[in-house]
Length: 209
Image: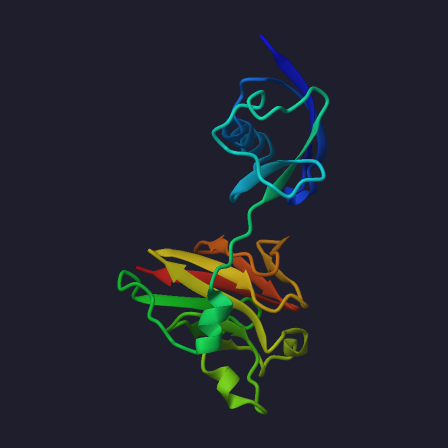
């Protein structure tokens, strides 16, 4: 049975380079599934040859693609536009699913609660100079002592088919979910009890169904 010695350069979570020995008949999709399982990686991944920008066909075998012994394959996370920034630009409020009677976040230190009544639900600070930017502001942290470390439009909560997501919508000041930094423009699954850190402030997300 033909086997290949490969180097996988796994970019997500900065896993780095790993040497593997795999069957030549192994499909790209199965190799990706193995990588996700072994390194506990979420999201959609793709593989490509070193110095190439074209993804390898998922259903093709490595030998079918002409992958040579001792090759290096690059593993990347697939980024797809979430559409959130476009929705914010339209400033159109949409309701959450009817199955949720209440959606809210609680500021960890003061225990102050913010009800989220629409999406996109922006977390940030009131913009007195441009009131139009406040239409989707659901969590205004301006009155709090630590608010200067929070951007006007810092993060955003959305919901699709009953699943909630948090997203960094400004890319300058970090957003952390349960201690892990969120990449700009990436929607990350949000569950009840999760801690969202923006600047020096922490908000605990909750829903009531």
